[in-house]
Image (cartoon, rainbow, N blue to C red):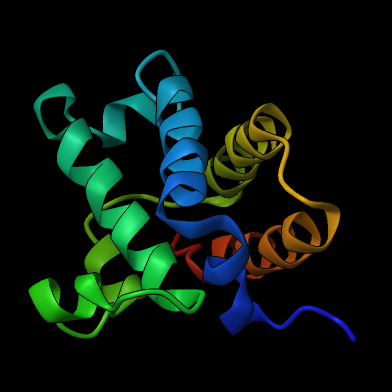
Amino acid sequence: MALQENEIFGVLGEEGFSRLVAAFYRHVPGDEILGPMYPRDELAAAEQRLRDFLIGRFGGPDRYVESRGHPRLRMRHAPFKINVPARHRWMENMEKALVEVGLPNDVEKLLRAYFSSTATFMINS
């Protein structure tokens, strides 16, 4: 039986999502495209928001919604110029993070598909 998206938290737990998101954010500060979108003094908060969002999205506690309400991803990202190169760079960095943390293949496949479609959805310029 194939793993469902809402079962991913059961496989990775808090620790797995923490490792993935931390690996992603290690690539952000020095990135010439993404780095300017993330003020250095807000990186820790951005990391926490992404971690909480992913945990809730994939079957874990819904802390993101409890603290911030509906994700409204496009609205929250509207202030940032997200063009095709920015989308691709975000995916490149997330791909690096996925490889770095070495998740189970079925989890990685589901997350990669979600990240790819969501990154495309976020393009606003």
